[in-house]
Image (tube, rainbow, N blue to C red; front, top):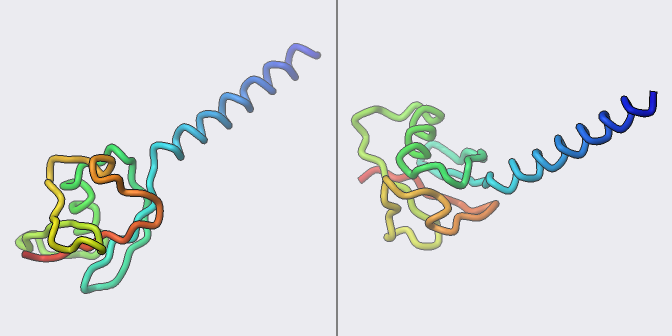
Length: 101
């Protein structure tokens, strides 16, 4: 029936728009450490401390390590743990340095 096709088209449109919205809220970053680089995606609203936690787990870094995150081009401007990636205008492809202090 025609009705089913219309419903199907509406659903496809909603899913497509949902995917665009989802992608618009995500950012692809390269987390660089002494152990290598990890290309990964985070929500733009992710807090810095959660990016560090995810990176700590990925690279299997010790819990005792006191880690900070910053942009590669400004290595002395450490990000505030309670702020989000979006607060630092992090964009797709940015290299973020994860370093021990």
